[in-house]
Length: 229
Image 1 (tube, rainbow, N blue to C red):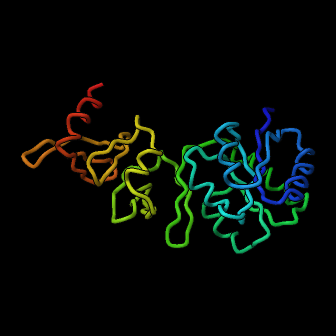
Image 2 (tube, rainbow, N blue to C red):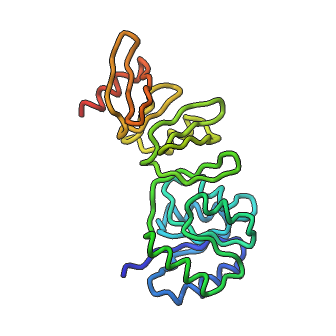
Image 3 (cartoon, rainbow, N blue to C red):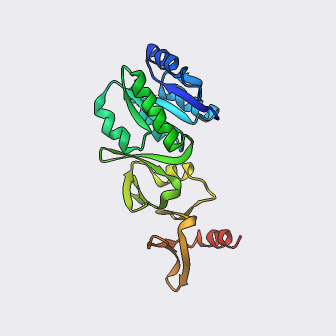
């Protein structure tokens, strides 16, 4: 069995050491590093590419949720915290599991068994906080993004959430070979294009999800060139 590359993120060293010792009992878990805060964790995640992170939620300055919000390539997550108020929020972001401190060995084993079922790995996702709820959205599920005041409105599956970021900032996180900026106010996923409509009103893209998206005069030649390849 291939070992699961694992990172522990917790601001308390005794907690990191205790979890590290407990994980040594699992032959298929390879601990590749520890981080004491979100900044360290972000750097290690980008450099070491772990498949799984044990993530403390409540940390000084930046929380575990803040860390996830800064990433687009997000490993599988098992939350570890002393604050049970975060339990529901953790499951809303599709974490593998949620462990309360102090961690019990049988509860850790159950979490790792769940990981086996779901399969560990890194996925291209966005972490979004909207109206007190937390969402971990796969980029492949996003078909349209619209600018709305100081927010980006993200359409995925049959849901819509508001992400407090500008369209320009969000565009920098998205893979350019998949997402295309049709105008100042909209970005589409090219994989959801159904057909192109060019009429007297301009160029429009009909998405598989049903939306009709206007393509600006400036962006129209770029889209035609991309679709001709």
